[in-house]
Length: 112
Length: 113
Image 1 (tube, chains in turn purple, cyan):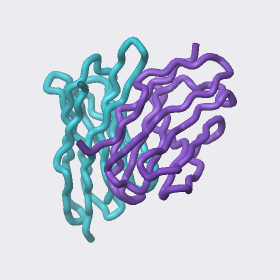
Image 2 (tube, chains in turn orange, yellow):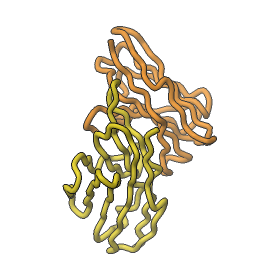
Image 3 (cartoon, one colour):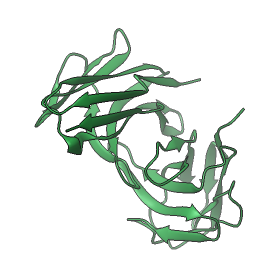
C-alpha cells in the first residue's frame, strides 16, 4: 500500500536527551515536511525539504534538526535545546510544493 | 482506527459562486475539528469547531459541525480566484497520551475568473 508512515506512535524523552522521529513515504514524493501541533493550535512548520540532500528551516526550527539522505525518508531529531518538546508531531509529503500534502499518523512526544 | 473523509476530491467553480466542502469522520474521543487552507508550504488555520450547531464565520467563510451525524461543512460564498487552494479537514482526538490529529485527503478548489 502507498502511504506515509511515522514511528513510533508515542515517544518518551528524558530531560537533556535527543530523540529521533521517523517519517517514511513510498509515494515517490519529492517534498516532505515536519509540523508540530499543540492543543487548540494550528500546525507550525518546523522543517521542509523539496528535494533529496536539501532542506530549509520553517517557522520554529530552533531545537530541531533533520536530514534528507533518501527521497523516502525525512527523520526529525528533537534535540536537548528544544525546551518545550511535548507536542504532537506530524510529517507530510507532496509531489510538489503546491500539491496536496498527505499526512502521516503522527508521533506524540512526551517529556518525562 | 480514526478516519476522516473529505468530499469532493476537487471542485471547479467561477468567481461569485458559493461552494460547500464536506468532511465526515469516525474517531474515538473526539476533541475538535479543524479546517485548514493549503496554498504554499504550510496549511493555514481557518477554524476550530468543538460544539455542534454553532456556526463559525470569518468573512466569506463559515463552518459548522454536526457531532451527531459526525460531519462538518465549510462554506465559501462569493468565491474569488484567491480562494483557489486545497482545503484540509483534520480531527483532533484525545487518548491517554494526549491529543492526536488525523487529516482527510483534502479538497482541491479552483476558482476561475
